[in-house]
Figure 1 (tube, rainbow, N blue to C red):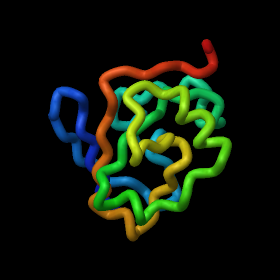
Figure 2 (spheres, rainbow, N blue to C red; figure 1 turned 180 degrees about the horizontal axis):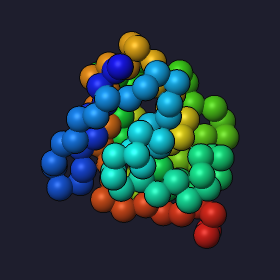
Figure 3 (cartoon, helix red, strand yellow; figure 1 turned 120 degrees about the horizontal axis):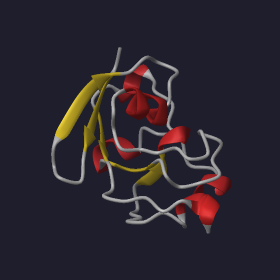
Figure 4 (cartoon, rainbow, N blue to C red; figure 1 turned 180 degrees about the vertical axis):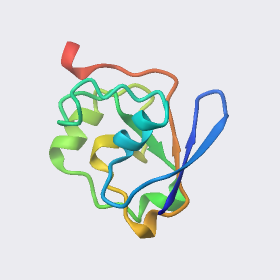
Length: 110
């Protein structure tokens, strides 16, 4: 199983094993990482926003236009921001480093 590294806003890192085919949101929620996923992974909010470490960003599939639209509503947006519900774990993502923003803006609430 690939290992995924979450770095919280306070700088603490949590490394977890992630089953191939699961999403970053699912893995985060199973391991107590602060990603809300208010829309339950239907890409209708931005509460699973993560910042992908630059060294892994190019390994991900490009975000869809819908994901880009939702990301525009996220707080602490960066050039490597993604929605955790849209990142599916594969073997080549072993060691993936994700930064968890200090807060989330729920796009469902406006």
